[in-house]
Image (cartoon, rainbow, N blue to C red; front, side, top):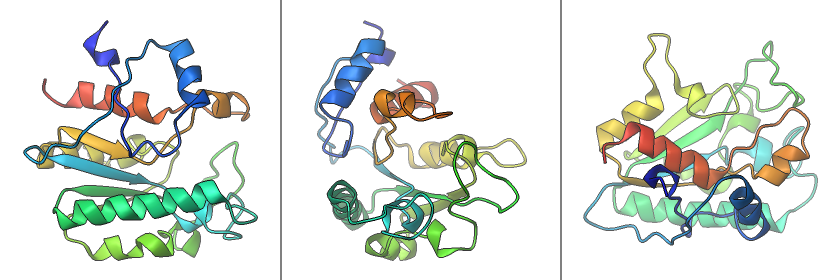
Length: 205
């Protein structure tokens, strides 16, 4: 099997389990392994869109309408992991969905408008903004990598990985195949696939 298709799951895979993994394996051959974050290498944490507009009840068009246990547990676990990374001074990047009012993101209704509280981190994670090892990146599109391009062609996310010489990472973002299939206009963005391919492309072996 091509080494680039070797995918890793860790305790940070907060959503992609069970049925989701089965759906992914139907599309791409996967080898599943647990990951232990070694102390003698640089590990990175990527927090993706854990913001009010997606996670806080009643905060916006795409926010939950009522308390949701899965979201609450995801936020709690993300905060716990972020605390560990900050204590160890490991690099953390937080992507925050932040759109301009005149640039709708189809097929979704207006959400997470720049300057609104929707586009801010949830209360349980606001503390990371003051941590020196945390990089905040406000993005104006679905994909954090694409949303990290600068006018000069550089990419904030790629530069963050290279600068910190990150060898492994955990991410909180996940759009499994079955979710995208049932969402008009959406594209699958599996957590484990996206990050494994990303690191195989931008990091040396």
